[in-house]
Amino acid sequence: MVGEPQLSVVLPAYNEEVNLDATLAEVTSYLASAVPDHEVIVVDDGSRDGTPAIAARWAARHPRLRVVRHPVNRGYGAALRSGFAAARGRLVFFMDADGQFDIRDLERLLPLIEDHDGVLGYRLHRRDPWLRRVNAFGWNLLTRLLLGLPYRDIDCAFKLYRRDALAAIRLESEGATINAEMLARLRARGCRLVQVGVNHYPRNGGRATGARPDVILKAFGELFRLCGALRQERAC
Image (cartoon, rainbow, N blue to C red; front, top):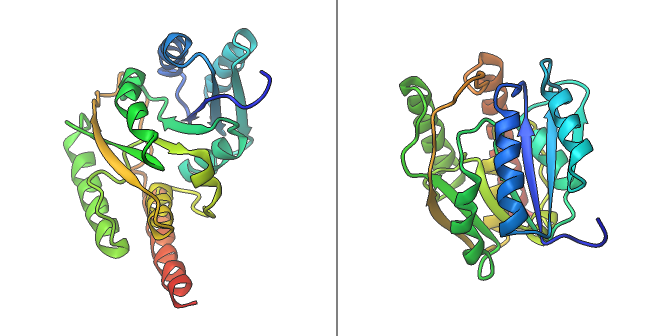
């Protein structure tokens, strides 16, 4: 590819061998007609299954697809940050690689980005197991209260940003707090953000890692550090 593409699509993936082939088939097929001037960046976050081989096979066949690999699992936030750092597009979109979103819903976001710095998807009907939905409700409520965020689905992994808006903020979260940090820092800079509903589907296979105790503890630690950092920055 020569020059700056219109759109960079970042797909973080950790142990997604069951879902990655189908996700990449849908993403590349849709983008070929909807946004021909694009690039796809798969961020393999230290997967221990067949994810690296699948990603490498797709990259070998598709010149618009690149792979960024972490030698060890660093966390969801670290995967997104690596993807953002590699992105060259004027616009940066990210979506999970687990098959729970439909890339075609990007059509709902693209028309809004011209008048905003970010378009935030929210899940119209979340299709996760009930315990995961309960945990997510509590986490979303806590982050909204602590950070003063007015957004209805902070952790929805279907968002579109202007790359210059992302480049203007410093992101430090390695884990699940990354979305809350992005929104808090963008809002503090006065960025224009809008929300739009998107579809959500049950997992076809694989296992979500968000409910692991170590992931939860890391997220809480990052959230409270973020609160402290934001208070300090406002006082300066």
